[in-house]
Amino acid sequence: YAVVGRPQFLYSAAVFATELLKGTLSLLWVLGTGGSVRSVVSFLRDEWRVFLRVLVPAGVYNCQQMLEFVALARLEAPVFSVLVQTKLLTTALFSALLLGKALRRGQIIALVMLLVGVTLAQMRSNPPQASVQQQPLSLDSDTIIGVIATL
Image (tube, rainbow, N blue to C red; front, side, top):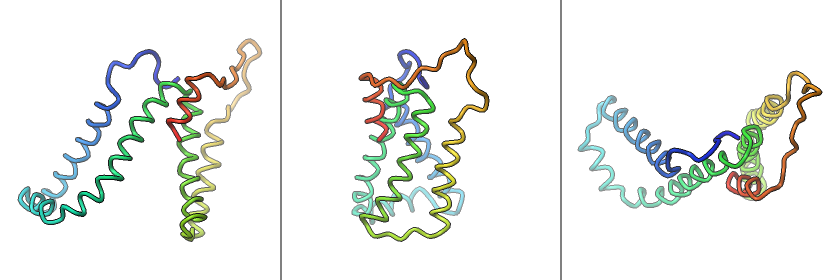
């Protein structure tokens, strides 16, 4: 498993710290490119409706990040890796099928390369030894929770 035993931190604290770091780096970028704290505050005050519209997908993204920590604690690392990459592939396919978005040739090639790369990365380069038996993926409650949390 990617996370063994009981974690020494809260998943929500890890996600919060990540978002705080991103916000700090964004503010430093604005200040480094000639902006000011006053311009940031003014922008947020003037464009509060845009801020509220962005708040919903940002909240969903943060929930997804916390669920990925749950999945990491319950799935083996290769299974988690493949499941995370399939999310990108299914998102692209559903956006094309349901939303009518056209995928460019380069995007399709990139998706196929991603799929092949993840598959090759998960394959063993040498066959397992006879003394070590590989455990099949079990369908216990932890695995099911991990898969659902990832998807």
